[in-house]
Image (tube, rainbow, N blue to C red; front, top):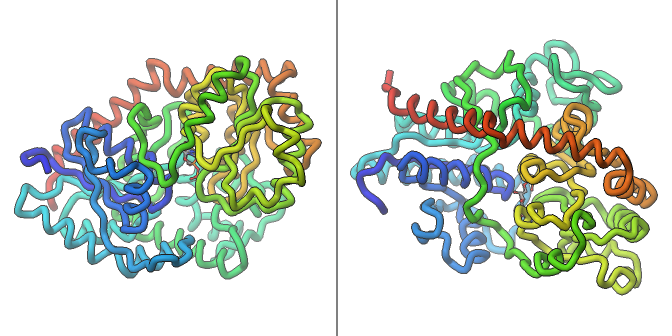
Length: 451
Ligand code: UDP
């Protein structure tokens, strides 16, 4: 390890969509501000990162971020879902993080621990070690406001104390935010008991984050102006979109063959289809409808579909679409979206994917499935108007949606708007704004004193 530099420790929630932005933040703190950045993952994630990157993740010349791993109590072959991860985070990881933080005491200590709010278990650990803590929200400001607003929603009778919606019909749960269907609140996933556990998870998060003085948001200037009624009024640094030029650690091996395939397609002709990294399977029926809709659109398509989901493809499908349709298990997504052959992106509205697509000026076809994806979708479709929502993912709707975006005049309008949003996000003002916020965070760290 490099001695003599201020050290900063990053604790992401253990999932791809969280590791990616935390990694980019760690990378920026190292390369732009000279920190020694240490990214802490549980063993099960660390092992997968090592496996998918041929063991190069710990090479400081690779991208400058040092990887540390802590035991998680998970066993080989155990199915790792939200509940197993929550158990590991609450019961196994805290004492190991504490040991790790203490191990730095004799070599200059740690200047700050940056904690993903979904890994709020680590806030108390850092506080016990008397190290300054910053919260990190990897998603958009709108979803942060929604979660912060939970106590108020209970008071206003919009949801009950278990998070079950009382209000019927599309509702503006937070003042000034677009309406959301009550069934689309982020914790409403799975069975009633799963919903209650997920809601309890958020209540715990809200409670633990009350003490935070700083909050870093992977959110961009112009995304939304209103920052009223935020949880515990921390000082906010909006550092998004984070620069994404460095190689990103991924949990799966990327299939680069799809780039060669894209090279052979005409400009703006291809539909890129991906539902992100963790989303609950959409089910065989939906996979079949999506497959038939893509076939009927007569456009070339690149579809990220893991082998576990391919059982939903209609019989003989792969032969019928041979040459026109390309399926991969995991794509180098930013490279794909950068490619001139990609004309639109049929997506689940994950926040990282949304930013990556807008950054590269791609129009969106949206089929949100769970969590924050519904909120993101309302911004994409209703506020920014850079995408079209698919209601049921039926074949006719998929075909029509693709044609509308790729051929119709609505597609041209949307392209104009997505380029304007890209300018807002990435243009001179957006970029300078994000850099200034990161500088302000570094200044806040330098001026921090223990009470
Ligand atoms: N991703 C990728 N290859 C794929 C599919 C996804 O590299 O084939 C990346 C994508 O670029 C994004 C992340 O995985 O950075 C997914 O994050 P997001 O927030 O969009 O969705 P989540 O997986 O959290 O639902």
